Image 1: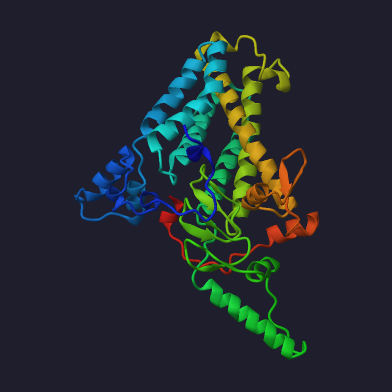
Image 2: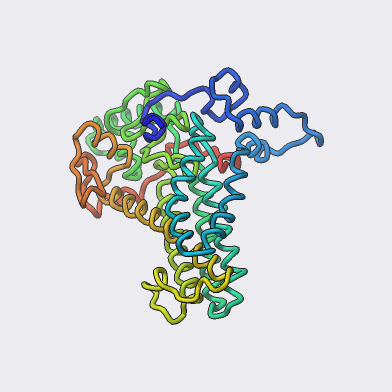
Length: 391
């Protein structure tokens, strides 16, 4: 497998014609993927009822038939892993590699995909289903604890939906707003401070002032810290990274909700794992129950729940690491894209054992960095959004 397939999307790289959201002309490309052929077949098929909602049409456009084997094999693999602890160790350690291998084998050049988002939501629903059907009947879980887990899931999905509404794309009207602000600054300078312009949020001023650059792909002027995402095919305000797990970019408009999604999910998952271990291994300490729980493999149901607790722990550990990196980046006022560029150009300093790259370009101290992050505004972004953006 070539490194070109494994490397993360580089900023300002052009896209292939089959990677955009419109697949009608995918037949002109070299990517003859099963998903694309199935998408074109669905779109060319006449509609029987003569009407189709916009959301349903977008779902059909992005439907990936290659997800079906994964959704079927995931519960099967977890069930096999519950047969013996050696099988559990083998399957759980090889499962991430199997998922990545299947993804690269079935998607090849396709980068914008619902593969990881569908897998994450399906895993979340399956873990909650086992919690309700296997752990709750055993007793020892109060109604308040069940409501807490359920509320955590609802909040996670709610924040995810808000994150999916868009990262804040650079529009063609943004340079006009930038020129108007510059003219207002000149007028206020001529008036010697007698008439002060309307105060704007600090993050907006930082976005619209500074050195602007022209995107080599979009051919539009963009403010500082904006970047072009070749996966989405657009420039994003204060681009942090393109997250494959949510099938969307993380930028100025949805960075806060993305951080809330991570935080609420990690807390809910840790709380749910604690409830499962306390139900399966009531005599064991919480820290040792995950590694030693005698008698858990005596029944298939308890073994499956214990294996799923391990599966959830692995996923939670990965997202916890991502959450820590995000918090550190915000504390140093650096985005993931800026950190990658600083590493490539050797202009940043590695801090905290390599968890964060300090560029020292926008950092103004811990407190001011968090104030700027929490007061970011999407006023310069076109508010137009619809339900199809959630897909």
